[in-house]
Amino acid sequence: MKRYRSPRRKTRRRIVLALVAFFFIAIIVWMHRNVTAILKSVSEATMRSVTTVAVNDAIYYTLSDQVRYEDLVTVLSDAEGNISAITANSFQINRIARDTAYMSQQNLKKMSEDGIEIPLGAFTGVEAWAGLGPRIRLPIIPISNVECRFVSQFENAGINQTKHSVYLEIVADISIILPSETSNFASLTEVLICESVLVGKVPDSYLQADIFGNGYDLVPRE
Image (tube, rainbow, N blue to C red):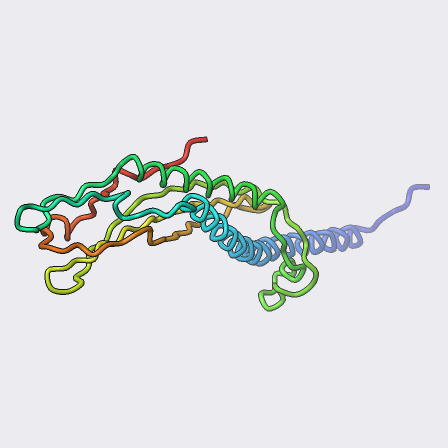
């Protein structure tokens, strides 16, 4: 015998189903907005820390042999003792920048293979609980691009004396592919490589410009 359902009961059932569907959609939207934001923040903070360690380890490895000022820069003086020319050793500069960039990228790749640990509280979407609970290892797909370049800085060091400092800048562009979206950020590390006090008048053309310029920016090749 066919069971008869009244139109009112059918309407009520449709309303209940619509409310349940709306409830689940609301939960999904809320979790996507809140949980994803917290996961993105925690992942970025973790990868920034990993990037710092990876870059510092690469610098330590690359500069394990002490680099002297004379290894990177050649200073020429005229008969009166004034600075007539300052030239950069392109071979050494390119070697250090290339090796540092390559090692940094390899370290990042290796250190991120195991993913990152996210506290269970982060999945609640409540920022105050983000650091609570046991940690869950979340697999990530990091994509990194490391660039290195040398920059120089001139400072007055006394009468007829100028301090010339040489720095290595390492910029790591990181993209983290999370289950819900991709997070992008950049990390800058600056390291003093060497410095020297130049005795004699330094031409303004050197004081107002970087002798290394942008010609020594290097991007490691796979």
